[in-house]
Amino acid sequence: MIAQTFHWIIVALIVVQVTLAEMADDLPAGMRKLTLLARHKSVGITILGLVILRLAWRWLNEHPPLPENLKRYEQALARCTHVALYVLLFAMPLSGWMMSSARGFPVSWFGFFQLPDLVPKSRPLYEVLLVTHHTLAWTLFVVIGLHVAGALKHHFVHRDDVLRRMLPFTRS
Amino acid sequence: MHHAFLSQALAATLLGGTVLAAAPPAGSHYRLDPAKSSLQFTFLQAGAANTGRFPRFMVSLDFPGADPAGGQLDVVVYTLLLDTGDQDRDATLKSDDLFAVVRFPQAHFAADQIVKSGNGYEAIGKLTIRGVTHDARVPFSFRAAVEGGANVAYMTGKTLVRRLDYGVGQGEWKATDQAGNDVTVSFSLRLVPPAHPGSAQTNN
Figure 1: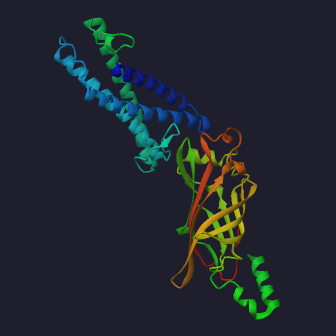
Figure 2 (figure 1 turned 90 degrees about the horizontal axis):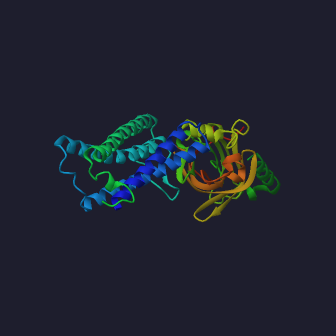
Figure 3 (figure 1 turned 180 degrees about the vertical axis):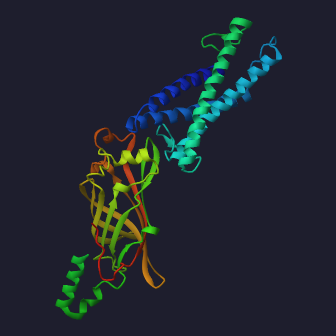
């Protein structure tokens, strides 16, 4: 139940993140862009916090094993995808945070408190981090695609409960 | 500067030698050493501190020793050249809705009174930003030193300026959620004697 909640909140926040980023990208410098980017940063830090809590939860609690009928390469693929998801969900906000520091726009979490700068102010470093952040985003989309494909395969091909047990309002 | 000096000279002439001691001692007039001075500003953007600097400004200070009465401070800041290290942010700050640097390329602080305050001093005068003038008091600490035979001084301090008092924030920028109203201006100055002793530095 807790794991499900983490999962779907993070999904929703990723959708919010992409929307905010796309909206801000099209705008000229100005208040509206600043507002959207400030939200994007706050939501990003929220995701970072949730991913840390999610990993702590996963570490402290037993999580359901993969179905036994999976082939070894399928098990390996599932593991790799999950590891990649966690790494990317960690690296995305972190690279964004570093990007903000490098550009001299420190991050505040919804105006409640300011986070420390991770790297010194540097335009060249910012440019590198910007490309990194975008590359990680595209990589994340690919891995999410794999993750969804895997879930659908469990449901429609293997006909197991792997997808169903992650859906809200269902109990396996 | 001229005015105070002239009136003191006049008083000295009228009253004879007794008030000569009140005339500013040598080295009481200073100008800025730009290479070793900084003037910075900090404001909150969506709750996070943003910092910039004014790389070009001029200072003229009369500081007649331990008793600051008769002191004067004049500071001209070229807002036109403000620098936050980010082109977009600089352009936004210079735009018509904020500093409007095309119409108002300078800010000006003219203090005709310096008083002791706490452990330091306070310059009392008029601050003009974006064509709007208000009374302002700027606290500072002052330390005179002799370096290489020259009378120099170090002056540091910071003061709070509410940008909307001066109209820095028109239209959507009147809102303070994205750019806070409170701007902290801090300075660390090295002051040196005027280039040509006896002549006041002019600011224009």
